[in-house]
Length: 121
Image (tube, rainbow, N blue to C red; front, side, top):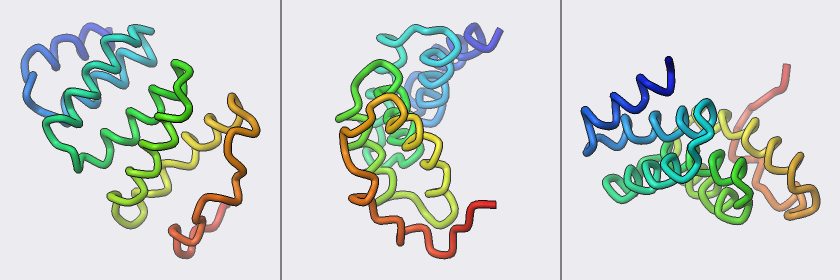
């Protein structure tokens, strides 16, 4: 059902980066339609290059399809453009990246100070 709704949404609003980004993530994760998902999220980023959540979703999708270098690049762009507590959402994405691609980039290279006052509970 979620996949069908995502397809309907991006057909109804093909110029809305938010809709394209969400639909891309749903199609990539639930529908395993990775080619369509990547093309939708790429389109969202063309429409709005400063779309922070689009960078996040793109990073996750690239990690899941085996493109960790692009995933890292998009996570870094997300961190530069996201505001406040929104940056915390990247932690599961980075965790997934390092789980599947151990040793690609040492964890120490990331600027954890960006998350002022973040405490794991």
